[in-house]
Length: 193
Image (cartoon, rainbow, N blue to C red; front, side, top):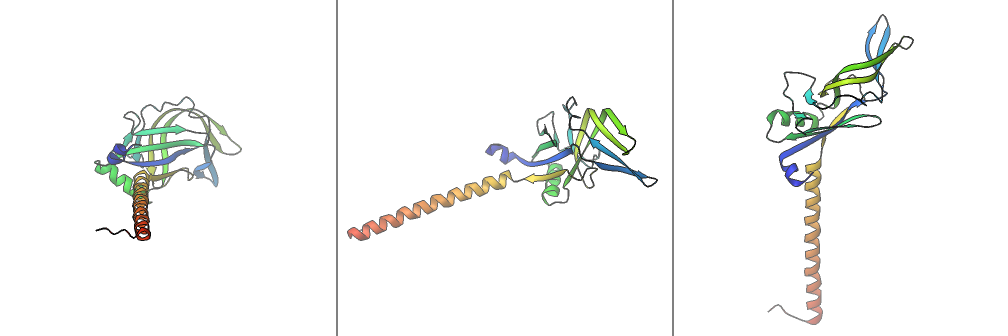
């Protein structure tokens, strides 16, 4: 991201979907019924128009969207990762960012339509093999899959720290040059008059 991007946006990243990770959907009669998202489930999924929400709520205004390039989804071997750009002049988005930054919200989820799944009766487990469409990725209080995450990216902070370090280095070099000149002048008995 360039400096103008850092001036306009804050960044949040995370893992919205965990592949091959089992979660308990519900318990019935002492039996746990589970779900797993297969690592190939997103191979043909429609992810062309996905929004970022809080707790999947339609009452919470979306803070980013794939369609306007403020949300990027990256399907990897172990899950689906998100990169979210939130405009600094968006109050709803900035409250979302602050809640993530403070650790009040630190997990994710996603809403989707299943195209294909299987059920293992012995293990009481559904395996989502193919996803038709993803509607949202959401920062949530209580995720279905605990091995998801969301965090505030420190790009701006890192850039500020780097700039400060460069400024300190430049000042130190300047001071070193001044001390060197003073030593040379002292050795040669040159005055500043």
